[in-house]
Length: 290
Image 1 (tube, rainbow, N blue to C red):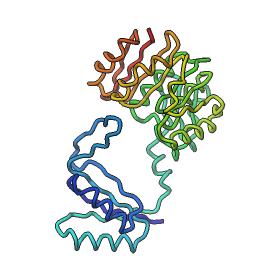
Image 2: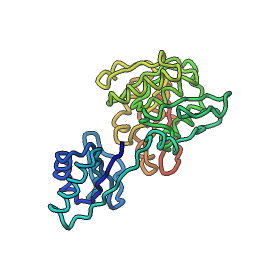
Image 3: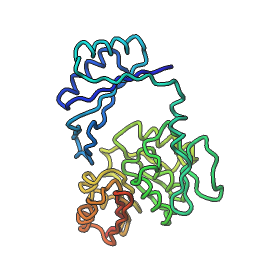
Image 4: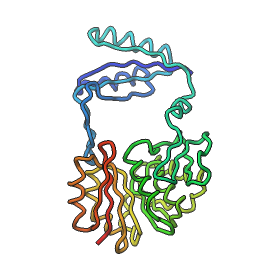
């Protein structure tokens, strides 16, 4: 099946109305990106900030509706520059996989996309389904956590993967011998991806799912892995401490390098031996409960 895109740049106040109109005109999907390369590093919980100037991309799977939408835009907004593009029919998962190759973290841990051969049979190999990718290890925040797991002994440990996404951290921990990993995520699709990826890697029995509103029930864990963002991480310092047994550890990521001190300062009341590592403007913070 061929797909078609209409791309335009709009001031932020006009985006919501345009989104609604394009949807009514038959767009099967609408995405936003920054039209001016102005970064939004992270929202606070409950916030959905947008850029001042936004690139709106409307996707169509029907040529007739696509042509009608293009004509409507030309009539209604003659000054609006609209880029019309036909997308070649492709196996999109395979196209994505062309940019996602087996990757090594530390000395002995690999993430291998499903369909690729294992590079090192003697290493710990996590097979990941690209169609379920909420996190693959390609981003420095995930890579920093995978590297930590490769360098530290988690054998027989009880852990929490808070904001588990695709389950990469939980599954890697189990492959390295962790006894059980409690997975928490606000997105049901992330939990589904985690369970499917865990099954693919033969460690589904080690996954326990806890809903976000039940996290107070998590106690006496050996460690917490949390690759989310600095703002929620700073709100969760006490919550994480209460999840852990004495001297339990935390591994935090999703932190911008300039936020490192702020996060470390927040955790000083409950944790000791606080360390940070920076990679490509992102930071990992690890520590041990007092």
